[in-house]
Image 1: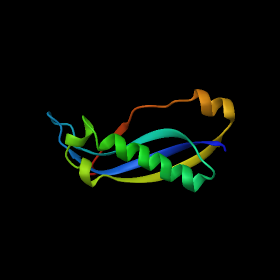
Image 2: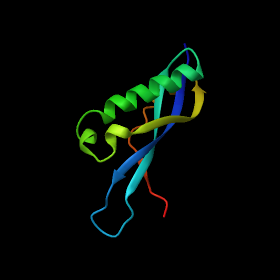
Image 3: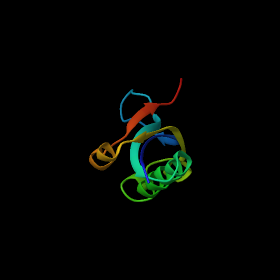
Image 4: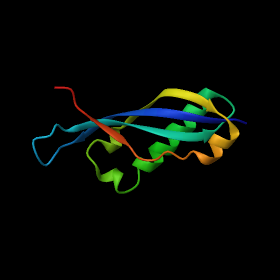
Length: 97
C-alpha cells in the first residue's frame, strides 16, 4: 500500500479577529496517509482532520461544527518520504470582502 500526501481545504469557519484584521473563513492543511488509492487517501485525511476539529481547542471555535473539508490535491509518495514526512499545522485564510 502506498503513501499519499493530501492537501485539504476547510471552509465554513467564522473566527473573528480581535483587531482590524479580516475574520478567518477557512484553512489549508496537508496530511500524509497510507491508502490503497488516492480516493481512499482523501477520505482518510478528511477523517483525520474532522476528528482533530471535533476536539479542543478547535471544537470551541465558531464554525467548527459546520466545517466542510475537501481533498484539493492528492499525490503518491515514495516509501521513505511517506515514513519520514509529517506535515503539521494549518494555513488560515480570510473571508472574501
